[in-house]
Length: 343
Ligand SMILES: CC(C)(COP(=O)(O)OP(=O)(O)OC[C@H]1O[C@@H](n2cnc3c(N)ncnc32)[C@H](O)[C@@H]1OP(=O)(O)O)[C@@H](O)C(=O)NCCC(=O)NCCS
Image (cartoon, rainbow, N blue to C red; front, side, top):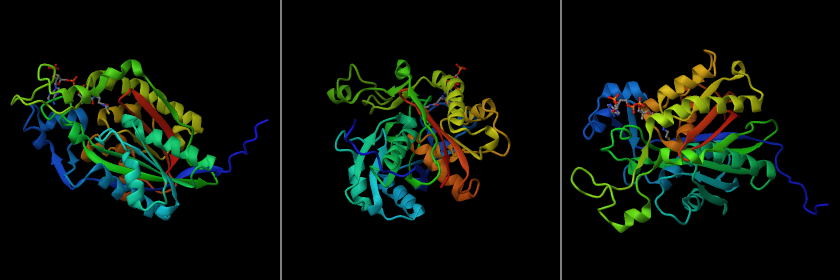
């Protein structure tokens, strides 16, 4: 017989507030075309992207997170001291240790909240949300903050025509807290490490550090290139289109939601053609609002789902209480899908 008392958390968890931060600088495709042989028409038609935001020196990972999280906390109607845990998903915070989450938790004014970073690429928001739900139901935290934040412009090779136009910067955050009814369904998640090479950093930090020009990529001026994200676009595209629609369907089934009962679909914003293909495969009815935030935001990895969620609510395209399917997928390869009630 275990001597440990049963958990005394909330019966269920839900998202109580959402907030986003988009860097001030808007970058149109014309700027991308300065360094690659392409066209505005090609970028729009192959990816759906028209503009993206790039962060300036002041718009750091911490600064953008604090802005987005502050809005999410206000939206949830709670005080920062009530936050018991801060989970930050990012791949573009360049200090290995300590986690940036601790600085964010402190600057937000939490009361020594548990704080840590996770690395789950473009599935990071779903991974963080799953952890947060567990904490609330378990009683380890009354409220948890999940932040997805990226400065992917720092990890973009502007001379690589297969990726230069894709990525953007920004932060999205949600507050997860107690609920009387289920507000976050079971997560369908996983990893396919056998495909790890399809999205990766061009050069690991330790190789970059050696400065050995014989082993490092050089730019057109002969300078060593900073490490960047590279991908096998077509392979990832095919995987996303064929495999992720199945995962999305499994998340609907796990939550007991039929496509007819769904109000909103917020997939990771990687490519508008992937989004359109998933809508078709899932046979989502006309009434379902589909996030296509990629047009003006680009791919912001872990930030893309909460940013898209915030925008749909802000523009009135979605409303509080709507039932939404969210799915993230990317480097790893990893994925996470779940059905949530919108804040
Ligand atoms: C990157 C991506 C937009 C490229 O689109 P695509 O339709 O697959 O393009 P392809 O790589 O097949 O290239 C098609 C053609 O366009 C050319 N091309 C590639 N990049 C180009 C560019 N920026 N401008 C113009 N032409 C380009 C290619 O050379 C190729 O020419 P070819 O037919 O003469 O050989 C797409 O593969 C994609 O979105 N992949 C998945 C991204 C994703 O989900 N990532 C998740 C990471 S988080």
